[in-house]
Image (cartoon, rainbow, N blue to C red):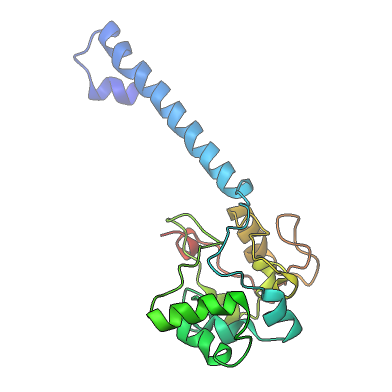
Length: 204
């Protein structure tokens, strides 16, 4: 109050109160809103239902029965921020021969012949202000299943974790060879050295 009084010395008591009371209330409301947003970011998160994809791609056949590594199709995962979705050309590397009579592969062949991309619907979406770099986690030997669940059994890919700040921080702060905190999945991989936890690591 003394600082405000020094800055606004010519105001009467009523004028001073008229200006300062709303400022104090506004400051309290702003602080409360920020606290709520931090809490929701740490403990909230929405697990959305699996979207209906243009082609019914069964990961349990590819990653499970045939033990195809995630990186074989999602080639960007070991090179940059994004895992990347395979192109039609990449799918045709195998399916120009395999499963040609399958109704789903026929849709793939139609896309190939028309030179159209497959409009896959994104399953895992983070807020625009969050940055997740796949290659950093691959280099740290964090299995894909830590965030994505057991894809080898997934006929339909869906989000299995909230992917909120609490889950991420639970992993980044865990440095001991013991089960991770309740904020992280039960099969969580513990890193030997703590991962960075400064804000700019994950926030744009």
